[in-house]
Length: 253
Image (cartoon, rainbow, N blue to C red; front, side, top):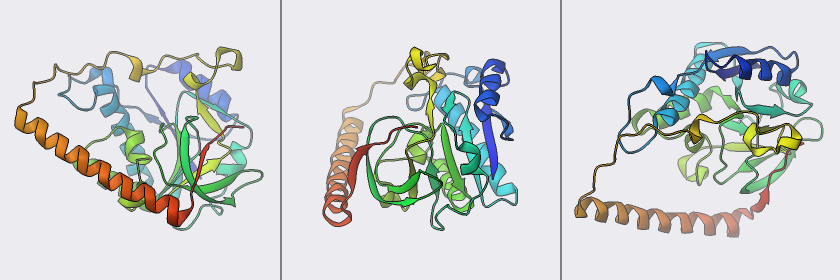
């Protein structure tokens, strides 16, 4: 399986870190889009979020331009557990209907379906809820095309597009690896080797000052919010009553 590593040209330290983490596993580096070179954005995504999204879109397009059926995409602030090479050397364990498989965890509560064996001690389960972070995942050709389409007209933060609220409602078939095999640096304590890197998302966002909304715009947004909440309630009820999902926190190890 091809592995794409998203890394800024000026971030040699992170590149060295990821070479150590991947421990001999071959990868293709993707030159990340640099958000600091973007002009201030209007209200919405920050320039760093836009740059992150475009970096992932480059990776999705590169998968579609090549012969592979799937690819593993990783960001450069990961800590990776043993077993990554075995997990990515073959795609035979990937469900035929999958758009993507999340390999890391944000240590938050998520909704999972029934588990099935993936590789070794690890299992995969359908992911039916939001799960933050776009730092490590496998995407299939069908998934790459779908994500490019979803993010073309209405840009979203990369992880919101990849692992959104109620993916089933969007027609996305997403799986979660459990236990996860990777986690972002800022989620690990210093005693565990974490907290080594600053994150661009924590920096000043570089957004332009927000324009004051009119009363009509506020009413429109409130109507959309209420409609979305109603749809979320219907979906949540279906998931609990019909699908019998498990609410859990995905560990790493």
